[in-house]
Amino acid sequence: QVQLVESGGGLVQAGGSLRLSCAASGRTSSNYAVGWFRQAPGKEREFVAAIHWSTLSTYYIDSVKGRFTISRDNAKKTAYLQMNNLKPGDTAVYYCAAGRTGWSIPRYMSQYDSWGQGTQVTVSS
Image (tube, rainbow, N blue to C red):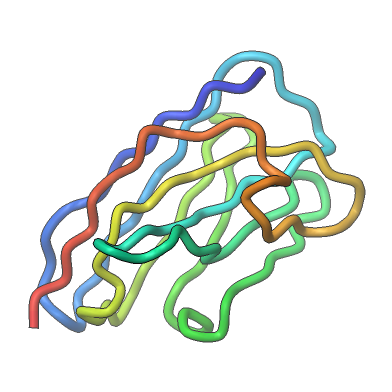
């Protein structure tokens, strides 16, 4: 199983930027995807973005398209979520997750079997 450790969260003003990192260790394969989810207080955890490790295909929810970019560095076994033009509505605990896949981009929590501990992102107005 893959172990994941997130970093890069923090407090930023609206319009600012943060880059989250998700470092993977343990047994990995090329046929998996890394996704980012977030959970705001009192809300359910929601999918944000994901990347297929081999094909580099990506998927984003509409509310972050054009503002967030997901990428990965294969040599470092690390995925990133670059977040620009942050809004107060982006405030949440952000989790990265990894899961085996074929060629599709998994978008549901049940499709991921490894999770990080979460990192807090707070955007002030």
